[in-house]
Image (cartoon, rainbow, N blue to C red; front, top):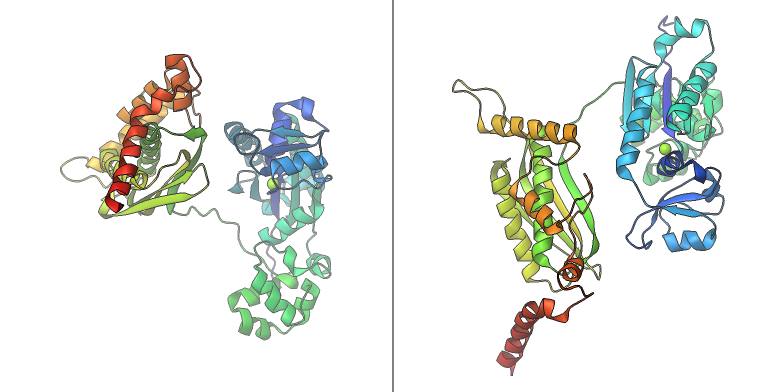
Length: 449
Ligand SMILES: [Mg+2]
């Protein structure tokens, strides 16, 4: 018999996080059906819905117009990602105070190791009071409702949260097997459909069924995972809660422009400015890229893309942007439609060697330090005080003051035309471009004829 303290892991999870953030930001929405939707003209999909909205059948993934049809009196909110990030941080700051080990797993979810609480903190209180106090404090200070589950492992704690939502559910030490007996195996997070099917083929639909199977049979079918599942079903699975920092494998961004952009040069300027931002991030994280790709989605939702693989890992803006410009021109030479969305991805990332050499700092090191300083300065001043050429060009394109971190800060050509000529769409504004294009087409026909 082990005398080791039983593990107590808490899983905390924000309820309908984005929708709750919107309500926290605007308390007038409290009690109303609320959903957050993407898209530019309310033509996107629902990315979060609160509990009240869910009662009307509104769920993540359905179209916003469908949501409106299901619940005409509900409120559609535009996403405010910066605010969500800020509220998430505030939530994790509070969670941090309740445990020596906090492992965030997403913007609104994380695990807390409360194993050592029994002997000290919980002598005066119960786990339920402790966790409910924590939940009440998050609600009070950030406005966000949080559900939680407490159990002997992170997997079981997550399952407890899902079962007890909204609220708190504790699975006491020793009661795990009993709790799991009638629960379907599909409730285990991360269980793949084909594993579920293969378990069903063995006659195992609930954890109770799994517990009745011989462990060697599960091991034969599923390998190590089968053994773990068997232990889990018996309430005997435990694993230490570790904070693993994995190296990034990709840095990317996808931006849907506020309007379909006819002007490819404007789209290019935006692409390069966005790439500059990503390159800064790349170097701050001391990484270099081997491959980069560009994806363009047009207003008819057709897509084109191109990618490039470098011989050696790259980290310099000048090299990356020059290649990206080439890719952009290559893609656009085959295109003839307005641009809806731009996607840039850096991948095949490797660690930058930033060991100081005998001869002083390396190029990579100096560039990295410059990026870190620029980032810090811009952060401190709450505006873009230091810019590269591409970013400056983008701001010139814009012409006016802009949001500090707007997703797509440039004014599209349609608005530029309006500013310059004071009319909505001067047909002459595109004359040259159209002439060129028509010339190409007529030449093509002439050759054929
Ligand atoms: Mg959540």
